[in-house]
Image (tube, rainbow, N blue to C red; front, side, top):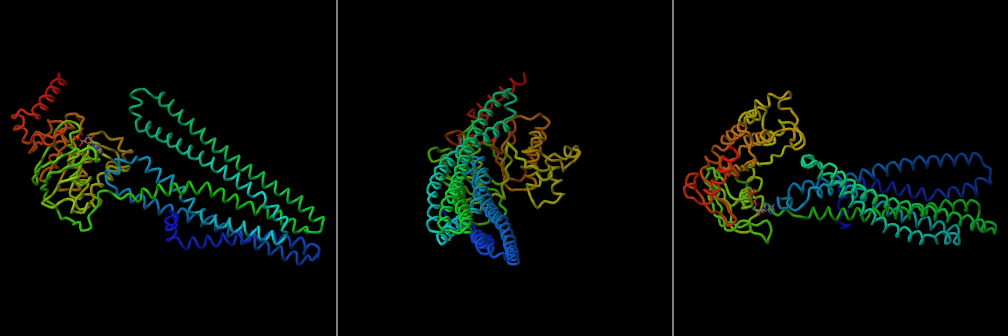
Length: 577
Ligand SMILES: Nc1ncnc2c1ncn2[C@@H]1O[C@H](COP(=O)(O)OP(=O)(O)OP(=O)(O)O)[C@@H](O)[C@H]1O
């Protein structure tokens, strides 16, 4: 894991070297400062040589300026290194998530992917910046300071270091509690986030049930728990920092008293005593740094592990090595003994045989959960089959590249997804290379033109997050316009379950039949009235394909379709009366 973590430094080697060497020089200057002070007090002050004192002071000023400049480099370039690595990882993760197949999204919560891409990577970036540098510098400063202290006075050096094991113990103890506190805090903030996500996305349900006060109560409960968890974390933090402060002051006092005693007995000069007191601070700093690292390391590494787990998850639907890029297809679809289940213990489709001729319109009808949507999502290879094969124009779809296969299939879903942007951008999503004229032509064919022109901003009208500002019928027409732009030979229409007003419905039906012209069209149908003109209707039940035929043939057969027809017809009569 650590080796893999370091591999992300490779592209930023130069930055790392500059940052790291600057940090080393800063540390060396910090180590040399108490020695300079000692010489200043012991040698220069008694001599009373003012010109020399001035020269040394100017030299020291030069060193300070250099040190400040290097501190700036360390702080800026160090963070730059961290953010560069974080950006690389975020890009890798985003690209990887884009490659994933439907099964991955079925099993992974959006909130989790979001927190991998934001929170986790932030922690990793911090670790990348502080980890190796702080660790090395801390070790170097600690042993460097102790070594110099030993050369000045062995007894005093040993007395100063005696407190370090206690300090390490306190820090380790605090860190364990700190980690638990952070963990609790992260889990509580995740609860708050999901509560907010639920209440905001479901605000229409909340308000229609007038459950606002219930939602507030639930939110206050989670928010209160988060507050408590964060307060605990801060309490441990305050305890840690005050303990470190107390111990540092305690050692300083011990050094002062013992140093004074040594000085009385002529074993220590005044300059050496002052430098020792300065070294105590230099000695304590690395302990503090390591303690901060001990907090950062598990957090960053846990995030990196979650990041690696996600990046290592290979998409289950992949192009074969010898996959072919198919040219424009005619659209002859054949299901050959197809068996499929979303997971190993539940088979949704068993031994399905089906043929759809190029240009034919086939509607799938059947009870809810029978597998209509599943059949249609196997054609663009959103999932791989457990058994059997699907061919288009005689070529097995698993032998085609996903890209060339999906480029030939257009899907109009019930729940049209609109991206944040304008109407123009949303239509253009169907073909990113389309010209203005193509886009306007597509809008016209989707019967959207007069609606768009009635808007003050026309095509440049922004549509809100997920298109909240547009009606269901308008969103569907945008989806249809996208399909006219994409112009695929195969079309999958997931018919809207809810009825639109008669005029909009007519307009959409009109646009859809125009769209379906000269294409192989698969319709997932919910309302029989809309599929009267389909070339063929396939009745899907939990036991597979039960009936097939034209509308009138199936009606005359008196089977499942006739029964469904009867129910829907009765419902319509009931609704009408
Ligand atoms: N992503 C999924 N992961 C696991 N199981 C699924 C998934 N999608 C559908 N299923 C299951 O597969 C079965 C068939 O579902 P499918 O959506 O294909 O039915 P449908 O006939 O289209 O239903 P509806 O008319 O209600 O849309 C159902 O039992 C459903 O629970």
